[in-house]
Image (cartoon, rainbow, N blue to C red; front, side, top):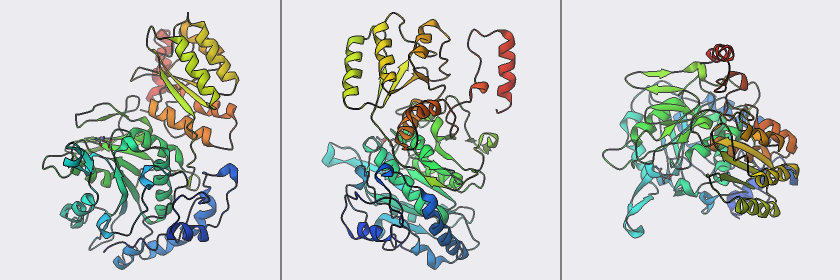
Length: 478
Ligand SMILES: NC(=O)C[C@H](N)C(=O)O
């Protein structure tokens, strides 16, 4: 069963007006695009309109769910990115060495789409590159086809995998690649029970956070994973991560983006990479894991996102005209002010400050506060995050942070830096929102990325009474 990618253009999505890759597939997508987006919604895909097509196709697909011969007709890939990232340097091809279908034999099984972008999992030492690790195209596909635990275990889902060309290190990935993944999930949404995204660990928490915002009303699991040791090594963490991600991607009860790594499943927009070399590379500092694996799999399903109430949509536009500044005691605020002023000349839209503790900066540096206030007044969304790994920004708790409130700075609460940056880029990319709405929404929980205020732990110096009340509130969710 080798999937045919030649039919991939029959359910086109997106605006291909600025398609960089003049090719048969671009032309075909152009021909089939049923919605003409205007300038304002260049990268925004309102998939409600196209959803009708997909629902119809999904009906066809599910009617033949057990018909193996139809597997090779699934639309594995039809994304044509107008805001393409590095993964789109080369046009996708139909090469069977880069995608595989692992069919099930016997009773109907769940079906999972594995999209592979690269990362250590796919790598091997390359003599041509100073013996450093680099991705090997086709290696995953070959390996998957030989995994008997996937092909012959009736409990395991059926896997259809696809490798992008070229495979890349996740340090090379960015918003264009995240948009491409969102579009490919959208295109294939009704054909699969869940999705696995294989990528490098370095920027995985950013990608998972970004996808969390891009995929609206997600009703299926989208599980990111990768590894610290390549799959081709005899001792590796890749095999287990891949298998467990596939299992979670076929879950009936999950409808969110998550990362599976080592022994834990964590919410994508709560995750952060915490270790460069240990196999336990990810943590979720402000939310317990969604699941933990040992001899048993323990699901904390009370933490799972509830199923969506609306139809699945994607919104892939991201406005990345933002900078992130981490303060250091004794920093040169004249340079910081100059940097902010210079960035404003190039239409800075967002400024994320990594501050001390609960969101404090030196109170004596009024020049800097004035600079932030004037940026906020001019329409820049200024967001305060904390340098602490765990806990939340509490604006105004200390006098040193109080001044920020007056300057129009908004709090990132207990969001990770990954969630804060991608959420801001996502909201700034939404053409339907005003700057004041973007500011308001930064402090509202959209996808489980932050703990709602009433459930946050009390401030350090709260009265005993306040602490008891806050504890009661918290016990409602955990
Ligand atoms: N473990 C990894 O995958 C790291 C690699 N540099 C990447 O992010 O692609």
